[in-house]
Length: 221
Length: 142
Image (tube, rainbow over all chains, first blue to last red; front, side, top):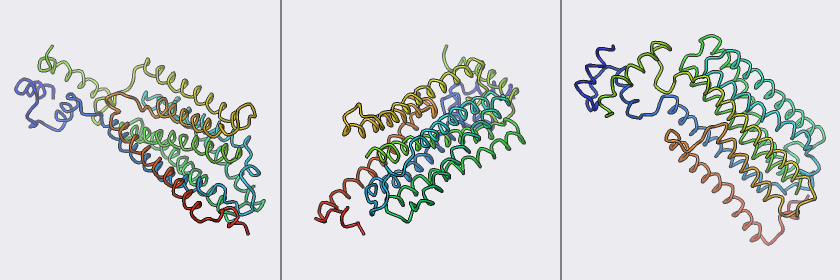
C-alpha cells in the first residue's frame, strides 16, 4: 500500500485525479480538509437534535399560552414542590457530566472510565425518572391529573415528553454499554457513543428550559 | 514546505495510525493523547461548575424577595439562556472552530424557529384574547 500511495503522490502531487483505490481516496480527501466521519455523523445527529428541540418548542408554546387557564383548579404555585425539582435538576446535571466523562473514556479506549461513567449516568438518570414519576403520581392522586385543566394538560405533555426522552435515553445507554462490551471500542461503535452523549446533553438543555419556564416561573407567578 | 512535497510524510503518518487501530478509521478518529483526556475532563468540570452556579442562582432568584418581583421572570430567562450557552459550549462542544461552522449555522436556524414558534404563539394568542372582548380567565371558569 505504501508503494501505491507514493506513486500517486509523485504522479499527481496536487491530487486532482481521483483514480486511486478506496483507501487512498479517503486519505487524500481528508488531507485536503474534508471533515472526519466523526464530525459528519455528529453534524447529522445535531440536525436531529435541533428538530427535536423545535418539536419541544411547540409544546413550550402550548404551555406558555395555557399556563393561566387553570379552570378553577390548582395553580402551579400550589402544586409544584421546588425542592423535588432542585433534586431532579442536580441528578440530570450530574448525569450529563458523568456522560461526558464516559465519552472521554470511550475515545481514549479506557474501559474503567467508560463503564464507570455510563453506570453513574444510568443511576442518576434513573433517580431523575423515579422522582418525576413520583411527582406525576402525587399530582394525579390529589386530583390534579392532565384532565383537570388546560394548564395541567400542557404541563403533563411537556414534562412527560421530556421524561419519555429520558426513558429512551436510558435504554439507549444500556444498548451502548452492551455494544462496547460485545464489540469493543470500534470506530463505528464510538460514533454511536458520540451520538448518545450528544442526545443526553441535549436532554439536559431541554430540562434547563423546562425547570425555568414551567417550574420556577410557574411557581413564582 | 509546499503541500506537494510534504505529502509522503503525512501519508506515512496516517498509515502508521491505521496499522495501530484497524482499517475503518478515518483521520480525526484516532485516540486522543493523555494530555487531551485531562483537557477534556477540565472542560467538563468547568462546564459543570458554571451550570451548578447558574442553577443555584436561578432557584435562589425564583424564591427571593430581595429583587423587584416583576424583574424575576426576565432574570430567570437570562439565567436559562446563559446556562444553555454553557451546556452548548462545554458539553456539546459547539465552538467557533472550522469543524463547527455547519453546527453553528444549524443551531442559528433552530433558534430562529424556536423563537418564531414560541413568540408567535404568545403574540397571536394574546391578541386573540384581547379581541374576544371577554377576559379568557372568566370565560373558562366553570
